[in-house]
Image (cartoon, rainbow, N blue to C red; front, side, top):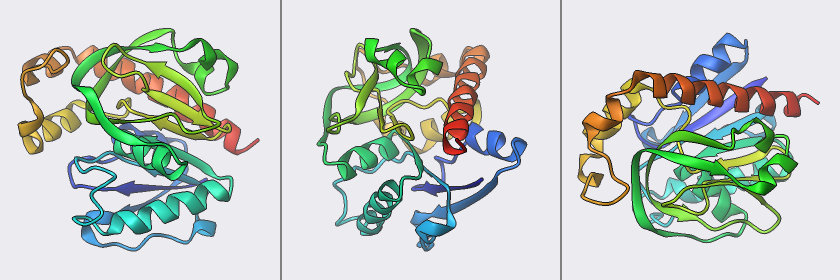
Length: 233
């Protein structure tokens, strides 16, 4: 399968997604938008992954490539291909599908529990999610639920944590792909985000339990496996 990811900044890469894709024998391509690299042709990919980033979906004046990226995401969805968005990526998908992206009531940074919604079990993607699990978060904005999408997960700090549109377009506000090195990179490059708040952890607390990364990555693998099976059905 031809998987292609869009990366917005040097320090938010695909993490465990790259490990999974290479182990499964998929072709993995990338567009590093911050370098000005061109987007691929829609027909040259089977699966699009849209990574996170510190910018807002509304920052087109600062990052003009966001306009082209949104049009590309729209074309990939219209072509009925698999799309996975993480954090900013989920917000870009939601906006492309007509939903609003807005400042969340709380910043959510660190490891916090996520709960599956009752509707999650009605979808193939939602069925791989446990009823409750810890996930890594790093966001101040969130997305509304696109019309026709199914709400998959929520947290105490943020109502819309995940959705699926159709069977193969998935938005995750949280980061299952992240590794310890990824958190260290985020905490270095986005240190100004770490301010006092009820859902903001100190960096030391984010890094103190190695097992959380393994459990989170295992869930990422299950989700990716399910998306791959749906894509090849």
